[in-house]
Length: 66
Image (cartoon, rainbow, N blue to C red; front, side, top):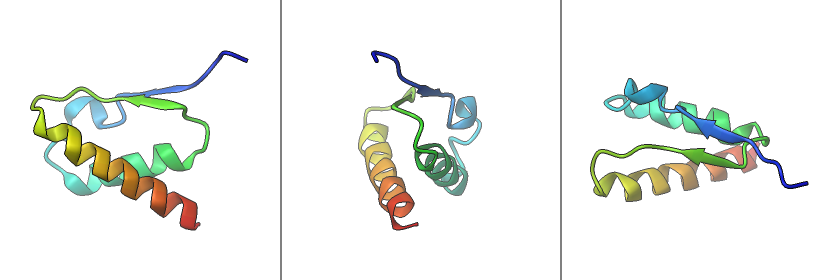
C-alpha cells in the first residue's frame, strides 16, 4: 500500500511532439497496461494541456473497449 507506478517520457522525451499518431499510440499502450497510476508530461504551451487531456480520455476509452 502507498506505492504506485509513474509513467515518464511516454511521449518519447519530446521526439513524438510533432507526430500525432505516435503520441496517441504511446498513450494507448501505456494506459492500456493497467499498471500505470499516473503519467508526467512536460508541456511547452498551455494549450497543450487540453489537447493531452482529450488524448488521454480517448486512449482510456479505447483501452476499455478491448
